[in-house]
Amino acid sequence: MHDEKEPDEYTGYAGHAELDDDHVESEADAPRRPAAKRVLLMTAGGVFAALLAVGGYGAYNIVTAVTDGGSPGTDGRQGTATAAQGPAEPATAEQAASVAKDFLAAWGRGDVPAAAGLTDSPETARAALTAFHDQVAARTLALTATGPAPAGTTGGTTGGTTAGSAGATTGEPAVGFRVKAEFEGATGAWEYDSALSVVRAKDGRAVVRWTPTVIHPHLAPGRTIGVKPLPDPVSKPTDRNGKPLEGFPSLRAVLPQIAPADGATVVAGRAVVISGGPGKEPEQLFVLTPPTAPQVKLTLDADLQQVAEEAVKQQSAGGKPSSLVAVEPSTGHILAMAYSPLNFNRAVGGGQAPGSTMKVITSAALLQEGVTPDTVVPCKETTYSPRVWHNDDAGNFPSYTLTDDFTHSCNTGFIDKGLEKLQPGTLAKVAREQFGLGLEWHIGIPSRDATVPVPGNKDEAAAGYIGQGQIQVNSLLMASVAATVQSGTFRQPVLREDAKRVTAPGRLPSDVARDLRTMMAKTATQGTARAPMSGLSGQVGAKTGTAEAGSGQATNSWFIAYQGDLAVAAEVEGGGHGNSAAGVAAAQVLKAGGKG
Image (cartoon, rainbow, N blue to C red; front, side):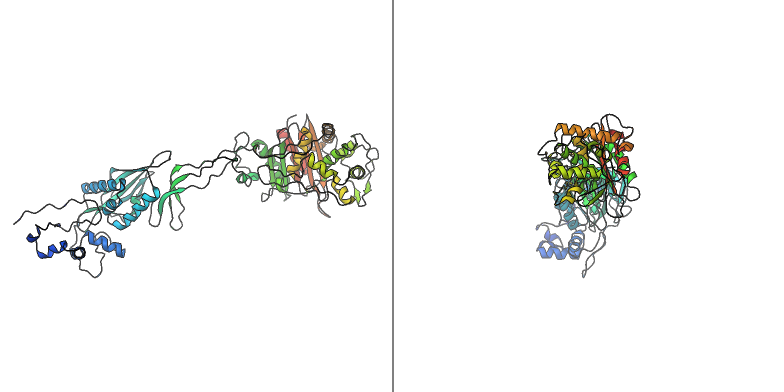
């Protein structure tokens, strides 16, 4: 007899397997074995045939890789003889600890074939571990066994929750382990806990039961894990004091239009993500580099924006479209912007006839043609261009001055004096060169410029002098008109300080600005704007506007005003007289933020 050799130690590489209690011998040992055993040493094909005849783990894995069938403890083959069943006892805790140690060491050093060979499904494990290595691409990967895990656990724990595996069997020893991955450029290491369970192969070896949860507790069949770019960061602009603006209804569509400053660096960021699988949303596991976007401070004032939102909400009750814009005359900063309905930003994108608020610009043109605030400009009940024109109130006032016509908003006086003193195109020129209307504004979001056309006949000219006809403006533009009068200088309104502004080709003469402020002040205290402006003190000025909307339709309400360094314009479609709906809204904002 000869001495029996101890079985070879498992090397950890796929393709090496022990066959029952025997092992492959050298040529010198061959004569002492039966001829049936020596067939293992002949050729590769002979080895494969012998493995099929003897059974065991190597045969199981080869057939499984081809047929995608079989499982630990089953044959998984077709058309071959079934060998004797392997050991029935589960792997011991010591064996589980040993194979786990070898598996984790091989995986950690990047030896995927060796790690996969220590599982019950080498080909599947090899593909999954290779994908993890390539897609996650950690700079270093450390895997450390943390001791026995609850029986049947193959997914480990994360956040205190045990993740089990449908393939685990009660009684299979499990080993917990911690994964620590480090990445180039990451701010920290990615760490998480997982676990694996150990089973017996048919040849008796202890091997890792393969399941995707070995890689990560949340990984499931059909899902993938890897580093992916995060969505481009969405800028969340704040108001000028750093307060958030997301909660304001009128700004929901505005804020996404705010782009980072020119030259600012936007970092998309990267994260380890599990994705794929029917009906599954991507799951973010670890952020390598967070997305960053430069903070943008808008010129808006959150406190004033809240008042503007409420004012517009009140005036739009009953379905009347409306808008309001507040501007700081000394800077051109837009402090508030509100509108209703919310499907269209009419505050900066709308176009409506401004009614008698246009008389501010008509007055500026007349003052530069030699008319003074005290020049007598009779307010007749009816005048012709040859079209027939009337005033809101009946009566003839032959002694009215330009200031009186402005204060009481007399249409006929402005039409008569405009046709007498102004050349076609003069109104458009003053509007453009001194008030900036008709220039291409860049406020920080898309906006509509004013339309002040050159009239083709006297009827069109007459309509323009009182803000009717083809003139098209919005609350933003008319708030700027009020701001230009208050400060004496056109400053293009902006939502952000780095916006590229346009400048007016000319400048409003200082004496004209002074006279306009005097006329607007009288309108606010004694004229058509006195009701909504009551209670406001200091430097105040206002002008009402009532724009015709068509036969049988309610007139549109307009109101522009200022108090100190705050100018406001409001409009309410179908709101009636300017001193009612629009005037009430504008006054609310002035009382909340105006300074005398």
